[in-house]
Image 1 (cartoon, rainbow over the protein chains, first blue to last red):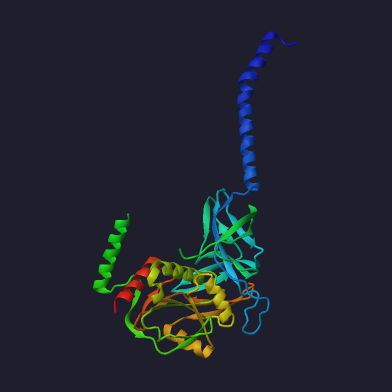
Image 2: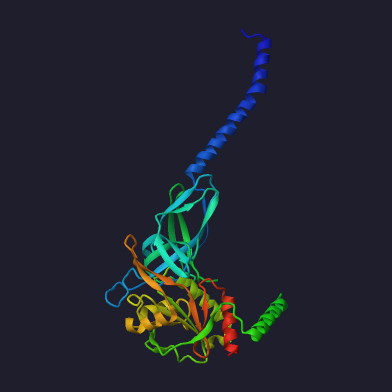
Length: 175
Length: 192
């Protein structure tokens, strides 16, 4: 049998002591949940997506005839990483092209060179710009002409953020 | 705002009239362009030294080029718009450095994406070589075995500008401002 004094003390303990503990527990839980969500969900934001115009080459190919891989375009954008961990763009897809690759243009002493890159790093709490004269998603072997104002779907794959779908608008470069 | 713009334009016009100074890099001594001919995308012949009275911008590129070429053609498009009624006194020329892929038909469809007035030139290796050499167009085929492209061209990014008297006068960088290029074309159309 508990005495009245004990019951009062227990109630007081419940009232005064357990509540902060509960609140603390809840807060830790929320932080953990947010952290979990953060690592599971995308912290990648993509803005200002556009592609340059391009034309599809004929299926034929051969002598003095551009082959099917001849028509090209490139997708540009700014990739923001709002997370605390760095991420990497590892691949891209787009049905408008037969092949989609990650490339980088460098211009040194007035000479432009391009090379394929295995991935494009997106720093933590930072951004990477894909723009003419730098990184771009290269569309090779266009299946149809891309004219200013056209739109087409594409998808990017990130090491941590996973797959992100985009709608790309074709715009004139050089403005 | 508009009056400020007019003021700036007047100031620039007077400045360029007095000194014929350019926004882009001028050659120390203008070089007369020799007789050289290539074929345009519509089957016509383009004579480099028979464009007198017009300012000619020549860029060396290829249609598969990811971004410097379309960027330059986009810049040309903007410049063409800025010139307004004077645009027909300028010629925007794209000379391919990848003639195997860039057939006249392909050049035609490609250039139409930018402007129906742009001229695309190609030719046999014997016809192209002296043009590349005279304008110092440097390029190199680079194999990229892992890429679906197979190969790429490393190429010079300058645009050369020929004046109304058929002399190579200016070099324009790939990242030059369209307004500066339009200004220099107007200067060349106004001065000797």
